[in-house]
Structure formats: structure tokens, C-alpha cells
Image (tube, rainbow, N blue to C red; front, side):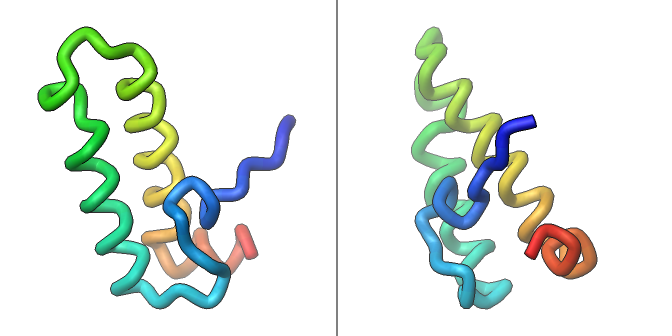
Length: 67
């Protein structure tokens, strides 16, 4: 399995706080949301990557295991 750098996906450094992670997620999710970009497969794919990254980094336990 290929390693995914979730920090890079959200455009953050490894020392980002929980608040920074949430802000970056919301900003990117709004930008790439399928309702905002109807029919754009690239935006839909990017949106899924952003959600996956936030699912891991947004949860303190999962983030600790990821790091």
C-alpha cells in the first residue's frame, strides 16, 4: 500500500494544531465539493482525498497512530 501524506493533502505541516487541521479541511472541502463542481471528476477525487485525510488527522487517536 502506498503511503499517503495526509498533512500534505491538507497543505499543513506536521506540527499543525487541531484547529489548523479543521480550518484547512473546511476551506478545501468547500473548494472541491461535488455540489460546487458538478461533473468534475478531478474535484470529486480530490474531495475524497481531503475527507480521508481529515478522518485520520481530525481524530486525536488516529492521528497519534498515523504519526
